[in-house]
Amino acid sequence: MFSLLLAGCMGDDSPSDAEESRLSVGPAVAGASPFIQLVEFNGENLGRISYVNFTVQAKSGSVSKPVNVTQYRSYLERQGYLVSNSTTVKIPVFGLYSGGSNTVKFEVGFEDGSHLSFSKELTSPTYVDPAAIYDRLRVLKARVANDKIGFDFFALQSGSGTPAIYDTDGQLRWVGVPPVLNAAHSLFVNGGFVIGGSDGDVSMMLTRLELDGTSNSKLVVAPPYIGFHHNLDLGKTGYLGEFDARINGVDYIETILAELTDEGHVLTEWDFGKIIADFMTKNGDDPSKFVRPGVDWFHMNAALYDPQDDSVVASSRENFLIKVDYKTKEIVWIFGDPSKYWYTFPSLRSKALTLAPGGLYPIGQHGITISPDKKLLLFNNGYQSFQQPAGAPQGDSRNYSAVVAYTIDAAGKTATENWRFDYNKSIFADICSNPQQTPDGSILVNYASASGRTTSRQVGLNPQHQVVFDFELPTTLCQTSYHSTVVPLEALNLR
Image (cartoon, rainbow, N blue to C red; front, side):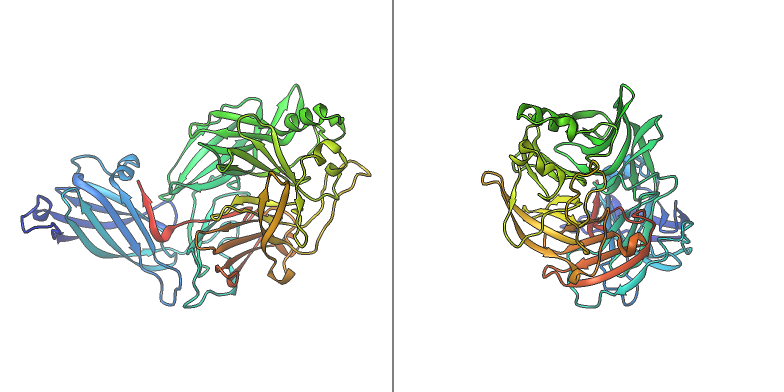
């Protein structure tokens, strides 16, 4: 343990209450994983803390920015680390390198404007992944000095366990704490992961997993839902969850989208089987030939809320992208491969967008988002349908996958491809996968099922779509990285 005299940083020469106090820093205690430790502070005025900032100094030769996190008083109190008038506080430090020494710089700010800065060495044990996956990253192309990219950390959302965070040097910097079930159904929001998990047909839970290793869960009260599948995405005010349902003994497979609150309550629901069947009936088609309860005819794998027109877009892997009005649930447009079965129905064809010449229709798409420049951005897998009726057209296939951005003209019923990245047509990921674009135009591309579904590839592109890094991990199907997301550990504020 060591003791430091607190130096004031007031705007005048008057002494502050905090200036006359001393702060003792105790030894670190192991956290929930080798990437997390708790550092204890002791002192008279710790109950007056305004914030604590820590920076994990980057390794020699690192190109990624250091982990830099500010934990404000409200966060420390909510997590139970800080109690008013306390003389002791434990600060969770995460994003450490495992298997060695970490230099961590601290700044402690007080309510009167004074602060204290100091460093401490934290030694972490080596992390060994019990599944032999996340400690097995292979660097195919390393990020080098002067490579500019708009992010420094990203998380892989597992189809079978904890999320894992890497830096753009390929160093593993965080994993969650078991048991975390099927974290593919998750998103990173407000400094932590929100995960939808199921316990068979018994219960569904919405779990908040924090970077300090703690978690809490809420029961999802949503009969007749029987399980999460695929993504969680941000909705208008809550989370868009994709569900299976069982009604009168019939399974409605991957056709239900619902918006959930933090407490697990359903705000609103979109039953795409009913939406499509009602539309087809109204417009003279027999929906029973297309909408087939008990069969995975739709296979919804992602959704998004579009604030530009208060709508929801769902990705049906088997068929198309479909946009519906948020409130009325009326179909706005349909965008997909016209050589598939859906296009044979005049009612559905009447809502179809026509792609401008030279573009790629979305085929088997995943990971749909609205990009920072308001384009429809998606991972265009390029593989035909699996579940069409016998003899019905399955659609086209390609031997490569691409990230594609489109401009949609709903009034003109057209789509225009703005750009694509296909890595020289060298990678084919037939299922799962996703892209994410950052405000500067950089892109994280997750090829979740490359090399015949045996490897996961994480590729970073600069704003000119040049490859900055390329990492590879082992996988089965797309369990290792069903979905990937940028995590701002280089400038994270927890309030």
